[in-house]
Amino acid sequence: MKVALFGGTGYVGSYIIDELIDHDHVPKLLVRDGSEHKVIQPEKCEIINGDIGDEKAIGETLEDCEAVIYLIALIREFPDQGLTNEKLQFKGSKRVAEIAEKKGVTRFILMSALGADPSPNGSKYMQAKHLSEQFIKSTGLNWTIIRPSSLFGDPRGGDRPEFCMMLDKLMLSLIPYPKFLPFPAPSFFTGMNPLDAGSYAL
Image (tube, rainbow, N blue to C red):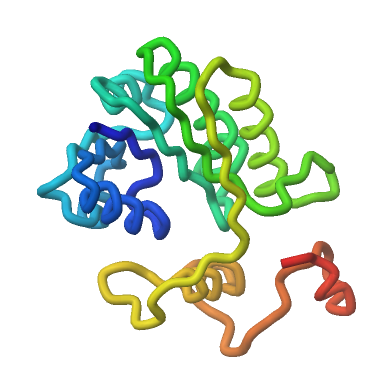
């Protein structure tokens, strides 16, 4: 069976590729130009070059697939580069689901997050996850939504990054990237008051 995978070059995607191949499925991946080197076992995958705003590339990725897995999300946004959770998580999953329905791909798996929240006081990450969930539930697709909490992997890293190291680099870093803080700093709160650190549930 062919399975379309959006977000296959990321941390979770790399492990899903392994599992799909181990179970004799063929992963079809939408991959941005320049990110091909991030694909695990590329010789056993079908790679379509494009991005989540390219409907033609999305359609090509979904062609002949029986299922789709959507993993794309951002730990850290870069709005000046057009990299936001609303665009990549919500609008991206919505676009893929709509094209999947047109293509007759009925099985849709969405990776959301524990604590997906519509509240305007929540993070943009959680708001986008919630919007994605609500849209997928409104479709005629045979959907499954998974809500993991924090994710952990091999701390040795190897050919894929360990998730907590990614958090350190992406959430605790100073701008400009990739200059990093020399010591851990609380990140899970809004504003400048460090006494609010710890008020964000993780």
